Image 1 (cartoon, rainbow, N blue to C red):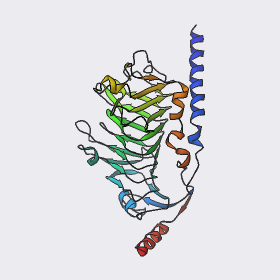
Image 2 (image 1 turned 90 degrees about the horizontal axis):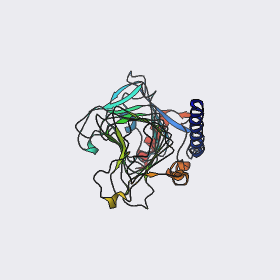
Image 3 (image 1 turned 90 degrees about the vertical axis):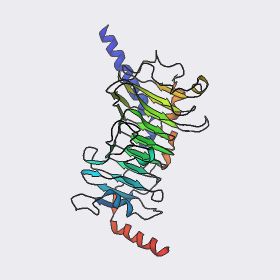
Image 4 (image 1 turned 135 degrees about the vertical axis):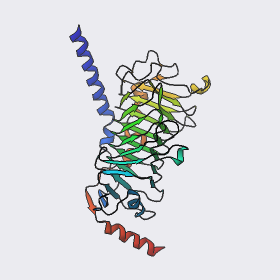
Length: 345
């Protein structure tokens, strides 16, 4: 009997992994709509790079930038508040690894005052670095505010306690990221796909992973977690509705026993408001994935319902997700662009 149960378990896991690979293949084969060449800027605290500070490198990019700019940040802890303005698209900031390149600040208070790292520009990419707000308990303390359209983050660690990640607007993609917090630690009004991410709750009692906002059912917005992992220190819910049309799904995700049996929190919403909330899960597994005690307004999704939210098509990623550049131009090309731009003003 035990062998039969084990065989069935492994069969189901294999089925989930096969399904996950099939429905996410679009992400891996997205078109590189931009050139694979970029202008390289290096940031190094030892003084061996082009700049000592990350913000100085961003400031060097001209307004209305049309070039791919790759800012390579050497290992170190950078105590900076980073600001990528709206008129500087096509910037990548890449560290040497989440444990090697750490961008940190400590500030609590109003949401828009606190972020360690703010991205207002479109077509931004973050790679292999840590972004953290170390303020801790007692106030909102955003680590990353991603407010520009077509933002992507790969192999990043994003950490705070309350309101860690403001995925505010537009289309966003998070791949193989570690995201840590306790209260509404992934929140906003974007259409965001989270693939192979690790969500870790540090709540002392019952935490809340997500708080999504969508103003009406016609908006193609929501948070979609595919092939992710949930762990934590204590019980947590999968999320609560910031608005009556909030949309969050978890698919093919391992949920440890930290996920509370009810799954979701109503945040004081009326029954009418909860009837329009779209919270659900598809083929999740682990001790916390049992849906038998879920709130009545949560959904167990069919493949047909989940599939449109599980691939890069949900965020239009086929047209804008791109690989890391493989060819680089000197920073002198950027300085030439600055001179040309200045001469045209």
